[in-house]
Image 1 (cartoon, one colour):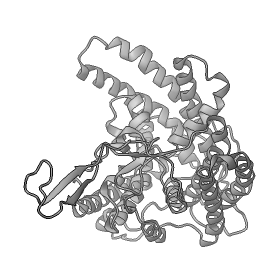
Image 2: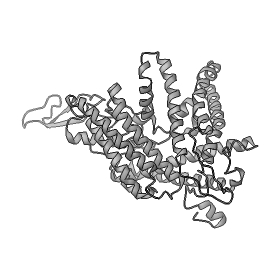
Image 3: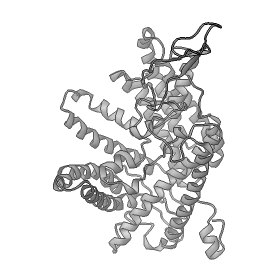
Image 4: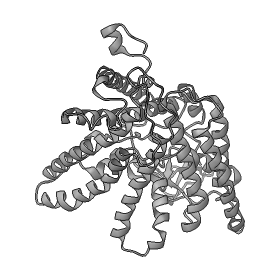
Length: 465
């Protein structure tokens, strides 16, 4: 086994940039430890698994409590901005879903993740010196012989040694999309773009770090421009309204708000991730272990490409596993039925997740233009439900109507037509999610995605916001 190329210190180095209340880390640490213990027990000999399955189910209960306490505890002062607690809730939901997957769903299908060697992996070559005075076979010089090891099996067996089990547990625990601490492998559930990822800069750490720093600077400027425009147009939407975007009389303004919410959401993901990846690579990690968190979603050539490849896959595995567990009684049905049903269930799970996150945020503080702020207390927030549950319909229209219409055209024509449809569909339905996002207070004055503004500093002298 090669050495880990993603040191844990890389994660610790980035914690200073996060606004997580320190007291909340107690619960998260306990929850993560319980999840790690549950993962480790899946590697123990088969003769113990009948007992261990009940232990895992039992441990999942206090583990879930710890994650709930981390995300929504009321025993510490919740004075941070709403985006911070949205992040805490997201981590808590993900932790609980990982417990559900590891401790319960695994008992249905017996699936245990395995390491998978990358296709670029090359088997080592052993160099063996020949005895003096005796010529080696094949080379005729009597110096050495080279024995090429037979090609490896790309799916590796589960580790049996305690230390390797610990490495396996830490690797699986801290990797969400299937990448690995080890440069020569990924996980068997990793999507193709993770398994085959090679940065444009190659494997050079210096070039990767330089490109990430340039990317962070460019993204920060884009975030600054968007935040400046949003703050300057704050009077356009009513903060007291349940539908602050779709009540615009101007449709272009509605679509602009939809695009702004989509873009800022991408930047909320990509800026911290680029910072983390540059820090990790500077500490010794391999650049190939850091595929981008999103894959150019704004240039997606179809709606299926946007959701299947362009958007982030943070919840990809847990949603897939939960959807398959729900459909377990119907596993003998046709593949097309299972595929369609899984899409609907996954978007339903995503809608539920976002509803939980928005409805559990702390109440918005009163302000002069909104003395009685509304708060999402109903799980049936219409904007969130309409946006996420309309996406399976859009995928169906694209595959059953749009693609057949242009099937006889060139590949370029097909891609352009599907791209136009995807943009129209996402911008139009995105207005509903913008209603939920802006109506939930995520663009309030208390929210500060950046703390230093080059644009406002140059224009108005306001460098610190």
